[in-house]
View 1 (tube, rainbow, N blue to C red):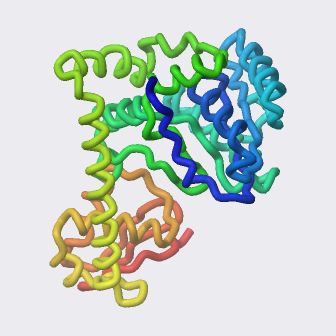
View 2: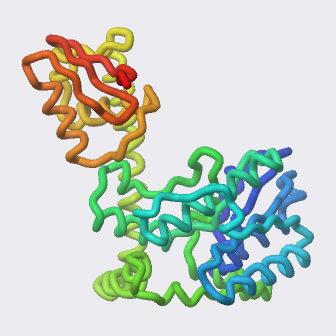
Length: 315
């Protein structure tokens, strides 16, 4: 039998953990494990279920979660998406909209219950699918590093375990779970990757999934190093809040881009990270004349000779 790889080091004693519960196998496994070990780990567990109202039988998921939490003696918070005072961007995919709604809901529950962590049931196969989604859509080294075990309030204790191990855990403990028929729909890129691409790669080499996980972990290590180098470079090219362009353009081009991103994040400037966006800023900074470049409705870059500064835009 495959052992469940559950990273309990992500959980701090004397804390409250909100578990995102969909009713599917992954979240049921996550909730059950935490419910069984909450006394040993010295944590309080609260389950949270969001009804997206996208399926006519969505109420069945709600009832299932209520029964499961009743059996496990875990408090459950449920809400309909239409009851949330939140509207995600309409131009996102349905998957992205659902994720934004859930995150908003989980954050509210965490705040109301003074929780220190929000646990999600992502596992190895989710990580592999995320890798290919980002590869296909185009991303950076940071993006190819995919999901992390910790991300702010969010933790993923099952990220290093396999789907097979999760299913065996449910079978061993005689745990039912709900099945979402949309998981078979080819309308979603993630499903197409899971149902066609990953099996094809495994047919080419039975070790494919583990090798992809190894590559993701190597990318995460590389990202950690690049983050450290970026922080060092950031300090050397700034005089207070002013960017010294002579020093800046002595940096490796990859570091230049990362310093720009760090600069915008430092000032809490909102932006959509794309290659054209960064290229446009670099072209502007290379101009020999002084000028102003609008980053967004709130922020602008003012360039004078060999110095540049990010300031609040005049309205």
